[in-house]
Length: 433
Ligand SMILES: Nc1nc2c(ncn2[C@@H]2O[C@H](COP(=O)(O)OP(=O)(O)OP(=O)(O)O)[C@@H](O)[C@H]2O)c(=O)[nH]1
Ligand SMILES: [Mg+2]
Image (cartoon, rainbow, N blue to C red):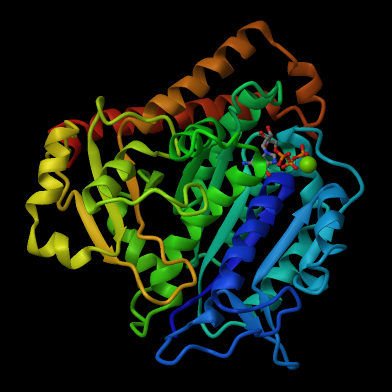
């Protein structure tokens, strides 16, 4: 079996998207909300459910996950429903009041839970043969997702320095929805922590996800349920190869390390083809699927500016691409995709186990490491600059820092984002290596 993966679900968004993810993968492993296997294993099905689930002494399989929120409401909604026996109670932690969309409250309030958090992480680690990676689900706009998320990355780096920190970071920008007003403060601080402590980060922009869902089926009016399903489906597909393979070398890090040329450039977007959940009727040729993978992206980055550093394609047509390598080249030409001059292989292809899952839809999924992601950091930095210039909501924010180091932290975070943008700019030139 490959290395185990331990999940961390933080704040409302992290808990809800993570819950959707667990629903999808538990279904694929025939595990019911009680943790019991409800279907006899298909013949010849190779399954590594222990990577994500731990087997209890009663023979049930429960998610290897830690749920944390500074307010109990969302957690109670999940653990008092059908899934009350699904999550281990000892892996759930909450306090009484939310962080009010404030990074500083999220970060500093979490310090009060340091020993409990460390104990939970250590116990879960002891329950693994060889834990490889921490998967963090969170939003970088709310206080718990951004602040506690930052704090947890620091703890993991300090206590379990060799383990990979892989973040699924959700960015609001919902069309027509009012979002947290101090989001630029939360995001700029989160970016600093994600740059310094995470090994890789996949961004999901709610507005981009809404567009994908509408393009797959114009009759659907996307809400959180559909958006969370899409995020979770992307993450679950990217783990199929690990969960359903006899090749234990298919570890998460083996797949994703090919995307990261230097440690700092570790921010990805994903692209997804049509999914049966959104459009049951649509039949797609392999070429249609590929087009969709390039068009349906989880962030608003554009191929028309900047350069592709690397990409990772999960496909049921791997052999086709090996036999006809020009397919991808042609498509890249058609889409005018430019590569960095120093990168090695612009597309790495991994096979998806096609026949194993309940979901028989043909699908493709791609992760992109593209320099145009810098636009996203620039946009957030500009928003932050506007706020800072006017000192908008600043005192309200700073009063939640325990000492006077709030301003210093902001200066540091801004500098770190500027350096990151510069790194992507240099990566577009041949001077990079
Ligand atoms: N895709 C998606 N986005 C969500 C969901 N819940 C919240 N969000 C987005 O995340 C942002 C706020 O994050 P929350 O997760 O509610 O905040 P939190 O981490 O609980 O932090 P506090 O409530 O401030 O303690 C909002 O602006 C929403 O746009 C969800 O279930 N799915
Ligand atoms: Mg909350």
